Length: 220
Image 1 (tube, rainbow, N blue to C red):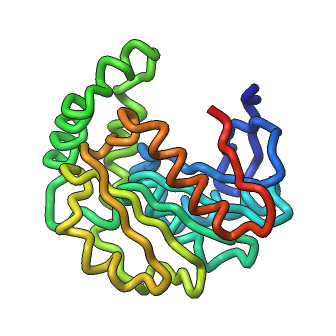
Image 2 (cartoon, rainbow, N blue to C red):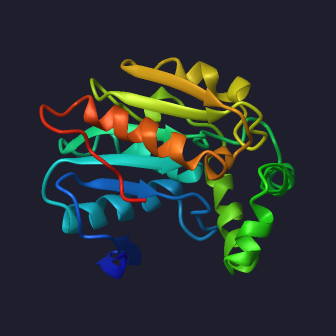
């Protein structure tokens, strides 16, 4: 059962969910992060501080969208990060306006049939999300200087019709990651909602390949 917890950082309180099971620590960093009042580097620093306080051993990190950018920036900060999975990461606006990105976000919510799911789950799509989106302006474009995966194995998962973080706008920077595996799936920015078993299976297999013992099984 997931437990709601929080940790204090110098930038404020960070909330997180902990299922408190399993021998391996898997950190998932979601999208819709950001704020017009705090820079990207400060968000990374806050998350880094939180992880240092919460986790004391090896970890695997999964990041989606803006969370993927944070995951990439965190990759060189901790010797405890064993493997990284980035799912449709937001590595910059690629010359697009914030309004166009918002349009594509809503478009992919509809295309991936996740808008009704979000509303049915009472997920708020309003002020906090729009405020977070304005914070994306802090990332005009990331480069290989903004992260350093080093020898850490990286798995990049992408929706082949993602309009929010289109592959053709990100492939050049992704290609510069040294130890990289790329896989694509049918769908937009939220493709994994309709392919949950496959999504979990890819993560389990990628993590398990680094373990000398029994495979890791993510909680469903």
